[in-house]
Length: 372
Image 1 (cartoon, rainbow, N blue to C red):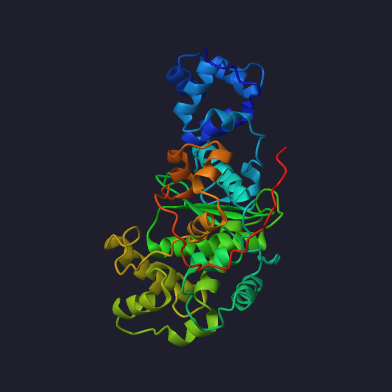
Image 2 (image 1 turned 30 degrees about the horizontal axis):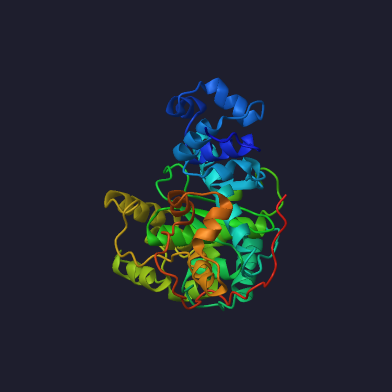
């Protein structure tokens, strides 16, 4: 006879269901109950039998213990900065918010064993063009990037600043990326080209810097974050010196700039227009040329992606402490497939220590967070 669960947290069922992108109808059909009964379970009005609990876990890639844990701090739509918010279906936003909530819970679990990089994201209220340029300059100086050098690895900049990054594989094109400010801010990326991913990371850094604590949308937040990304990745003084306007149009110098600064030609052209280095006519002609060649979505001259490192390095630091990755998964109540989906990391076969390229991860000996 199957054991009846002693505790069941309905909100965790909802969270796991939303992460899978399933409706109550879909999940009910899968485990052979009505969608109304799934609703009762999620609302906490009913509890499942032991057999149903096992079936729910298998359907949602979690263990039975997942449903007995306290509700994590959930990511709310109004707290996050979504690209293309108005055109993004509610279901897609709900799914990616659930994904990010679980990733945040995973990072919190890691902090039971390790000291992760402290969050170092300044809060700078900026709305005018000049204010945004200065905010980006301030961040470049704070992160030791100087005035005139390309950013070598944008993912490393964010994660060294204490902002973990995860990718959402297969995310709808209606969401480019999003971020959420909190005690531990996070960035979630879609799977894009290297140049677009770098831009998205700088864009989300702009939101975290300029829009932290602002509930809802600031005036033109996306345009402000775009301007911040441009100023952060293409610092004004250096870009003005390097950008050359030729009487006879040529793509070659633009791709040389792309290769040096690791941003798209489209972003380079927009930066040149915003700084008054080309006029509106030249910009529109160039943009039309990008579109005609199919380069707006598939631009040539791409470079290796800046991949998140913090999670991989943290996981490699656990075994020398006597903690296996499977211990972390067990504490979270996840199945290995969910671990891979949320973290982007395969469950390691071996426990070999890896060199720390992000930051030294010091051990917190004996520290364990009380579980509510």
